[in-house]
Amino acid sequence: MAEITRFMPPPEARMPPFALAVRHGGTLYISGIAPRDAQGHVPPGDFAAQFALCIAQLRATLDEGGSDMRHLLKVNVLLTRATDVPEMNRLYAEAFPADALPARTTSVVVALPVPDFLLEIEAIAAIP
Image: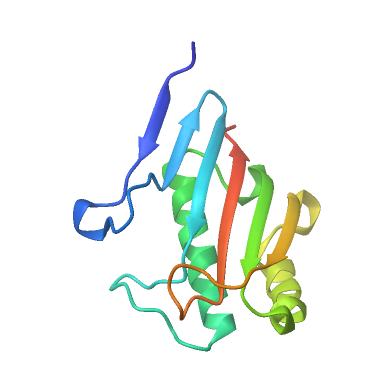
């Protein structure tokens, strides 16, 4: 049976109980990534800045879990404003390798856990 490894946030950063990611066998499951900077701040109302924070955290989580952007299998993007879909598509095309795009679902939701969050990104990746 494949070992399960959980990547936990530091105790002082753990608000809700969850693992940042879980590695099982050759797969890395990444929890929803929130648009917070290293100090826990969210740039209110700035979609591009929030997207960039999510992507930076996604890359760091993939790296820690032994994967990378080219090995993403599935990405779910949750948005709180449908009007951000065109900008999200533009930024997404810049952030993800064009020749290794993962499957993706984009959903517009009523709200996310923190009112200033405009998006959240979760993913599943293969571990090469």
